[in-house]
Image 1 (cartoon, each protein chain N blue to C red):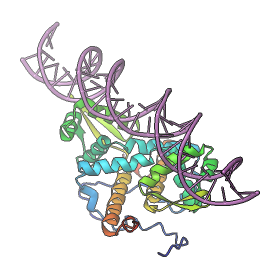
Image 2: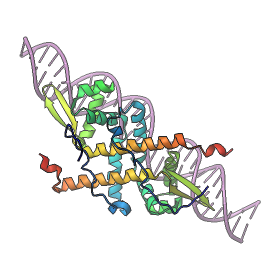
Image 3: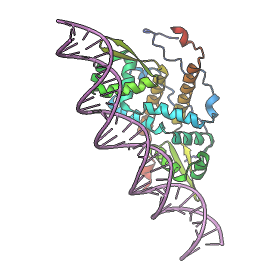
Image 4: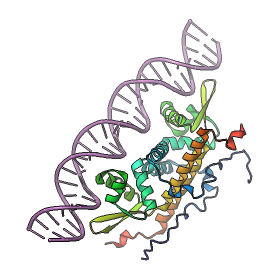
Length: 135
Length: 135
DNA sequence: ACACAATTACACGGATTGGTGTAATAATGT
DNA sequence: ACATTATTACACCAATCCGTGTAATTGTGT
């Protein structure tokens, strides 16, 4: 298979979202899947790992551990969970195992979340937004 | 701006995101805040509550509890957590306390997440598993 | 004042989580 | 074969989470 690591296109997610799911029922199954999705992101270690992997293309466990100031076991634990969900994948080079993000849509969601945080920070700081004039 | 029948405008979030945060450092503080954000969404009860509140403008605790098939205490617990984060707000009418979503950006994020789930479902359905060839 | 309904406050118990420490596994070099 | 490094597997423990049950609080009606 063509393994060209040079095509870094991340904008292929939710392109046709439109308004379809605006009134989706959100069944129990969907709610459960959503819960799992958010759960995997609800940990600062995993968030940092994803972020580092998003910037550097590939990183091995020891480098990630060093970058986060954590022990390799702890990092490996979280990487394992990310791997189980299919978010990252591994490639072995000698003693080192290099991880990289394969589900780039996750990064898209993460990016959106960071954006929301900044928005709410702005709101707290008193930045006059258009919405505030609505009342 | 399109056709808004009920003046439901939710698209005021992350409008100017651009590429600024594409290489943001993601400090420990940011990671921690992100973790909290995802944590509040990492629960199916809260997800259902948010979804119901997104569809119906306002709902009281008992109706929400009835809708989810849960006891009012459990629902109230989760509503409280959503309220603490400023995601929902309350309005008292007699004995009833009506909740509604005020942080509509959260709904935006939720919508995005649903979208990603559908994408990955599509991917699973459409791609012949490589692992099956492994034996 | 009293009874009643809706909501909330609070402590409890079972379940999950995440880092740690130890040990096992895999790959390299001598 | 042996030592060394990198990664993983596993049991342990403290912390958190969430629904439950009980009790307290708030508002309504008589």
